[in-house]
Length: 265
Image (cartoon, rainbow, N blue to C red; front, top):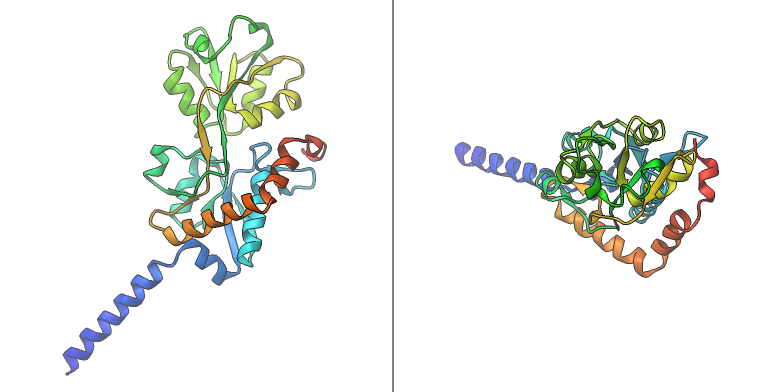
């Protein structure tokens, strides 16, 4: 009888363990009362820091709406982009909301929600290269020096599709852009929404924006593998805000106006 009870107790404990392990990010956030999101706030206009030290942007507003729909508070956890996936996997936060492109390589490590926007890589080049550089293919030569932010698809594209050129990356976007402004690099490779703002904010009349995207990049929220309940909830949330007008309102706020630039650092 004792042996039977011991076996039963082990089985119950195992069942409890499985149930606890299967609790998803959304369930944990609701239980905690806080949705913790890992973010590197340097990606205009998705996530960035204003003059008052507040993290703001299009994706930030989407996440605020998400947290409100859950009935919880939003906590943004600033994290370097090159370490953001390991930080998710070690429970530093519940999900990644940092302008992350859904790539097959990343998808081997994390699950992704449905995309909330699609962007593509574009170029900021030195103005004196106008006419000489008409597309990324023209940069595929050892005489050119490229830059972008480390760990982003800008870096991946530079090393894969423009591999003959020299490459030097930076920890943040503005440093990389300034490398081109100062003539130390020939081109900055990055997502089109960022570049359309950066050419005015940092360009000082020395940059030319080649605005035709040459990659297809869906941006999505990243979650731990196997967390299908949370994916289901987030995907339904994204569908809801597309249908009720919330998404269009936020998109227009950040992409059809540049009034917010006056409040940036």
